[in-house]
Image 1 (cartoon, rainbow, N blue to C red):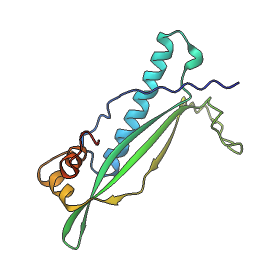
Image 2 (image 1 turned 180 degrees about the vertical axis):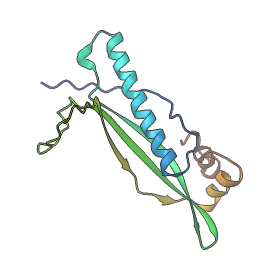
Image 3 (image 1 turned 90 degrees about the vertical axis):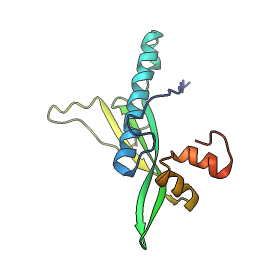
Image 4 (image 1 turned 45 degrees about the horizontal axis):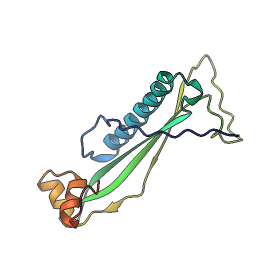
Length: 150
C-alpha cells in the first residue's frame, strides 16, 4: 500500500500582489514552493509524524507581461510553477534518471520549473491594471461582474 498525504498551505509569494514579467512571477512561485515545503515539514515535525515529511511541494504564481505591439501596450497573462523536492524522493523520479551527486556536491533540495502558455487580456482589463493600478483579479471582478474571481 502507498500512503499519499496532500496538504495545502497558504504562504506568501514575497513579490508584488500583481507581479510583472517572468523574473518576478517565477520568483513568486519559487518562494511559495519553498514556503509550502517548509510549512509541510514543520507540520509533520509538530505532529511527531516523520513519515508525513513531504517528498515535494508546488508553488504557483500568476503574472502579467507588458508587450508593445504596433505602438500599443498590451498585457499578456501567464503563470509560473515551481516544484521543490528532496533528492531522496524516488517515487517521481524517471526510471532512466541517472543523477548522482559528485565531487562532494550536496543537494538537499531539487528544483523544477514550468511556465504556462500566455493569452492577451481584453482592453478593459488592461486599462484597469495599467491605468488604475488594479490587481488583475480585482479588475476581472469589475469587468465581468464577479466576486473573488482571483
